[in-house]
Image (tube, rainbow, N blue to C red; front, side):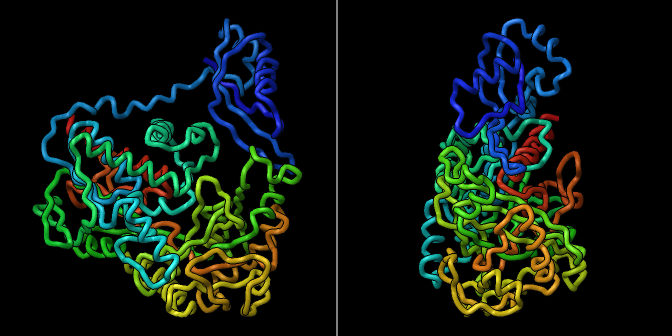
Length: 532
């Protein structure tokens, strides 16, 4: 089989035109193909589709020889996931424990269950459906906040209430990512995630997917226990022997995988109190910025804006500023909403969310600036967490201490004056916003970088500087501000046996797919150790 890439066609092309373009490219009369990937290329103001196809032709060797200088016509690579094959048949032994049911915990649990180890998955929050009711109730009412069932805590992890982006920049030599996507489709995700260059699933579809994976783990003898917050651990002779739940229950296991999310602050503190090492690491803070989606479509797609094949346009940017820092887009949500995402009482945190259809009126993205240990004001390993909390408390207080979020029009932000009312862009954040000056919330170094970045971004995205664009604060949960050191080969914690830190909370992932892939890596390491 061949792989043919960079096959470009206009937005309104037909299937017959795609086939003919392939035949012309290969200079053959017949070929059978499947689409491996379809990307939207909107660079330099010209919008088209770019395809990568897997192709079967007669006399393949002759075709390859005829195109030997064409790097875009090559033998199709073998992208089979094989890491699990060598370690799937192991002795059962003691049951593994997996803490957390975000993508990291779920995919670690899935592999362990398929290997016959009957893992116990512990989740502090609720199942996806019950969790969704709690979250939407809080958004609508504002006062009904549940610190154990929210955007950060519960089945599916923080990514459940996001755009559900299923792409990442991690290296994937073992081909875990195609396997993850196929498993998601088998669990109810739309099949187009297998071919889109920038696939997304949306909150509405993701809830069904995580529920299906949980049901498979249970069908294979595993357990998933909700409302099971780990409040302590039992360490004996340099090895993690058990976890203690908030109700006093003690759960023994081997190994114990911590697939906790980036907001598991109380768990970080508990582990640190037991002497487990943490390294502070950079993360980013900023705001969510909202523009009308039709404006973003026009920025990116020009005359093709609104075409049904293209859908709502996404953007991405990085602006390097004279402040010595960069501002960048994070978790861009076309046709989405800005949502309340705190996990602790008395704080305001924002995030972005889209459904699969991406049909809301506004586009939003994190408008972020990286901060690091030099900004935290303390050398303590967990100082980044307190830095986050300080910003989130100010956002809560500035918003009126009722979970309304502080907001400002972009024009007022650039002019250095407080906003007093909404412009042409209606903010989507619920339970509501309070118009103010975001200098009351964000550090000056972040404010200065965001201000300078706007003119840079506007060069590539004309209209980004829309005066009525809405900035809503504070976006602080871009990633964990800590990393737990682990052995690069065994993936076990460097200072504690039987403890496997994994995923976003441990500092080894940054999104749904990278977290799922890291959960798989850890599960593979556990299984290989049992084989050995």
